[in-house]
Image 1 (cartoon, rainbow, N blue to C red):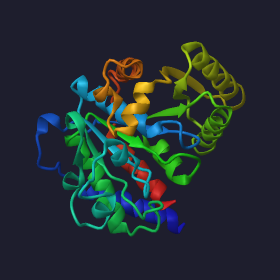
Image 2 (image 1 turned 45 degrees about the vertical axis):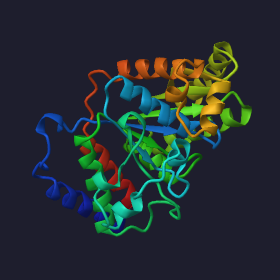
Image 3 (image 1 turned 90 degrees about the horizontal axis):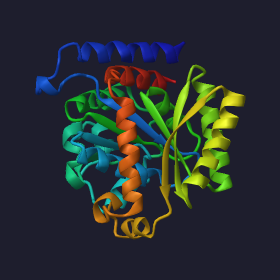
Length: 298
């Protein structure tokens, strides 16, 4: 009962706080920024690299993008970009700066919120801290058409919390048998917390060829549909590419460092397919925040 009371109180406070629209460009304030969670069953499958390159490809198409590094404590996004941010999500939560000042500008004007270090999860937060964070997320609507949540790898409440709140989820895996098994475990965990989930999107990374990637999709989609009642929508595959490896070592997105690379072309194709699927979709970012408040309360 205390958990429900806290979530209800936070919802009421958030709605009251945001009953008047913030002062920013009204032409960009539609409250319809799409929130996409990028998840994986295990680490090392290229999830953060996928998040970054998707953001870069979206920017190339003129979309405003913000990446939220939700792998709190490991800060993978800033490492892959070779950028040291001045502020992190902890500064937003603690009221040091507002979310606009906490954002770091990356390649092509793509912005990201650092997950920082020394934080294991968004747990044991006070009401004011939760409100600062959720209010910050609402303010991102004025800055972004797409908000990409780079979640923590594996199965945790933090991951399922963001997946449940997001308007869309992309699961990233590789052809490695353990990665496939862990991806299925993640999908099963999502089903357990979201019984009404219908479709999740899938990307296969580090595939030798498209045939191998299709085999992975067929396996995962088959067992997910049969045992969980979940359909997977295959967005495509990212091939094993030496240029991608070089870009990671240089701490640069392959979509910028080697735009001619096969992996960069595949990122572009997947981005175009994703945006086509998102066309006309109107999900209110306020719903994302309300769902998050409920999950924080839990």
